[in-house]
Image (cartoon, rainbow, N blue to C red; front, side, top):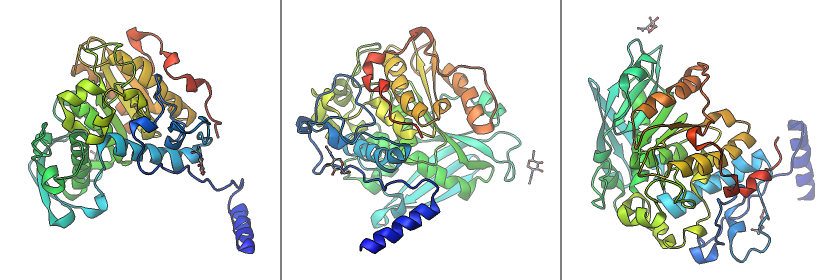
Length: 405
Ligand SMILES: *[C@@H]1O[C@H](CO)[C@@H](O)[C@H](O)[C@H]1NC(C)=O
Ligand SMILES: *[C@@H]1O[C@H](CO)[C@@H](O)[C@H](O)[C@H]1NC(C)=O
């Protein structure tokens, strides 16, 4: 045993110029900690601290704080993706248990997913393809839940739009109708996850039907509740190049903490009471105790790094907490992006106007062109616009970032 470890060490030393200790990830607590077992936090939780360090019986709070990029990608990022499913979204279905088939008729795709137990679900999507795109000159694609994209400016920029019929995927209610539920009925999964899943299965369908589009250059978008779902779509599929949540609000990029900065005061409680089906039932147990949540909206954004994320918010939005997203969530997530050396991959478009204003799509277009084509832009996607400065007291851990490698 001893000699095996020694030989192993030699092998690592030979194969790598700077041998490192193998990283042991902190354990994921089991059973899942309840709100009573998690310390309340009035500021945004430190994204570098693992779940096991947030337990009320952990007296050394800073224990096991993420200390390298390698540890982030090997331990903490997967842990975040797991804890968000455990606490908020419900478990994303295993794609290896599914097969996707699709047909195309003109600009309409009919997509059928066959899941566990041979259960099938079918939904539709419509294509808008820029002229000149073909199988050798493939266009990047924005996968959209719902409408709202000013298609002429996108098509002229050489970007295709595929709009998914999300109501055929999962009803926006407790009805559990639609393609997703015909496969996964009975599972404690939120409708946001179902809608996110439909964007991924549409991406699977593109190579089968639409050679003019490049599935390796993709964006996901939606506004309001569909913006929450677009965020989930970016989180759960590393193939997504750019995530574009528009006016997404709470359970998207609106914070649970600092809920009264702007908008109608969206909280965990009023969101769960209004549309409890968007997320899983586990989240309901935190109603009245949202400060015990081991994450906030910035944690979701941070877990998407190093892939691109562009946020759109209107300062005149009377519904969602745009100021909270801009001055609390965005700068907190940007600390993680900056630490990973990809600060230019996260941006925000703080614009005039209200909820789901289509001008937001023109505002983010230069960001997309930069990511997809390398087209430079002078636009400053780190500016908080009329909100001015970040509320840095919301993320005290930002002054103490881990070492950069
Ligand atoms: C820190 O992580 C180690 C494994 O790397 C684990 O044994 C230990 O229990 C963790 N400490 C806390 C406080 O969770
Ligand atoms: C695809 O488009 C490019 C650029 O417009 C053109 O040069 C090429 O001939 C086209 N290929 C096919 C197979 O149509």
